[in-house]
Length: 300
Image 1 (cartoon, rainbow, N blue to C red):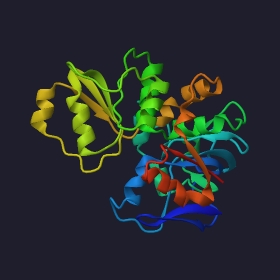
Image 2 (image 1 turned 135 degrees about the horizontal axis):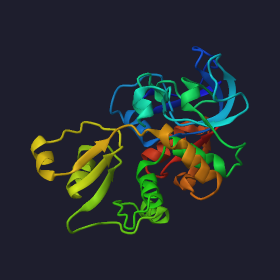
Image 3 (image 1 turned 90 degrees about the vertical axis):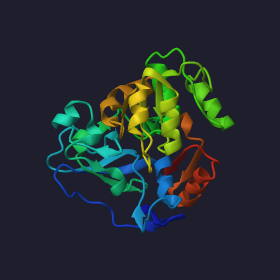
C-alpha cells in the first residue's frame, strides 16, 4: 500500500509499505476513505524534534476490512470513525469519560493513518459506526470530529453548548471569517476577562494569553499539544482560575457528533479548505506550513 512518511523534518514522502495485518485479537483493519494533516503534524515537520522515516497521520475514517476474533462492536463493511487515541472504552478511566488516557491507550500517530489501510488497536472500543455509508459531503465532516482543527471546532462546540458570547483571537482574515461562521460573536476582548477560554495552540505564549484572558473563577481548557510550556506557580495561585485539559477524549463525544452530522445539523468539515490525493501529501504539508490552507483533506 501507499503511506505517508516523514523521512526527516521538512521531507514528506509517499512510500510503499506492507499492508497492515491483525496483530492482536482486538484489532481491526480499515480501508482508509480519508485522512488529513493536523496542526500537530507540523511540529516535527518544522524540526521541533528529531524524526526519521516516521509513519504519519492519526485522523481517519474508513470501511472495516477485517476484524480480530475478539472484536464484537463492528463488522467488515461498516463505515467507521475513530479517535486519534485508541482505547478499550471499558477501563475505569474510560468509563469516567477520559478515553484518551485509557490504561491501554495506543496513540494512532505511532501507527500512521495517512495511508490506504490502517490497523486500529482496541477496535471495539475505538471505532464508532455511522448509520450507513456516508455520501461525499459527509465524509470530511465525520473525519474532522475524530481529529479536529482545535480553535474553530472549539467555537462550534461552545455554540452548540449554548454560549451566547464567543470571542475568537486570530490575526488571519480567513480564520476570523470561519470563526464567525462557527458562532464567534467577537474577535477580541477586554474588561474583566472571559468566563471560559480555550487554549488551542500549545506554546508558552498561547497558554499565558489564555490564562491572563480569563477572569478570576473562570475556566481554561487547554487542548493544544504542549511544547516547552512552563507555568509559574505564583501566577496560577493568584489567578484564581480553573485549569483543565489534555488529549481530547474524542470517543466520549463521537456518537452524539455523528448523529448531529448525519442529520446535517452541524458542518465541522468547513475547516477543510484544500483537498489533495495521498500522493500529493508533501504539498499538503507545505500548504499548511505556509498558511495557504487551514486544514488539508487527504484521499487515497
